[in-house]
Length: 174
Image 1 (cartoon, rainbow, N blue to C red):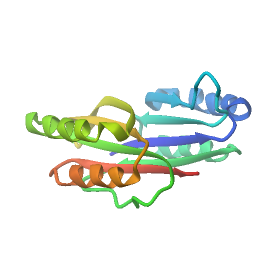
Image 2 (image 1 turned 90 degrees about the vertical axis):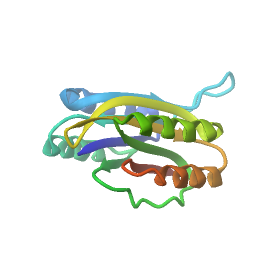
Image 3 (image 1 turned 120 degrees about the vertical axis):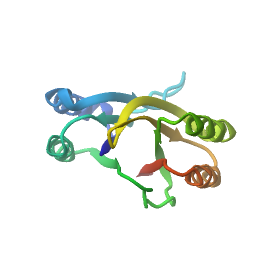
């Protein structure tokens, strides 16, 4: 099983230290970590987001998720990949992250890349990591989507037409 945790931090200045302390205490099961927030010359958002890719036993991952959920001022959502497709709703107004688990086959990587290139205008952030999926090498791609929500639906529909990949979604409503 492959597990990804998404975290929305309402006030980075207030809650980031507690989140960091919790993540550090469970650092041995964190494979990949990505954090991001809005930033421009005029704005540095206090709201932040993190993607945590876990590589531990199921009970260790549950413990970390439970500890994070105890922290006031943050929201925690999970993507768990197993054989088949996620049934998460595509109706989401907010920050949307899409996860794609791609078994290592020469033909799949090219198909997925072609679709991601086609829908590149709604992909704001892309993270790719190596993974083992049911004992076989795989690639995990995590996308932060932005822009036209109809394009999100079209992107996901195109991906779902590819056999053997798994798709998950995390949405943090506005």
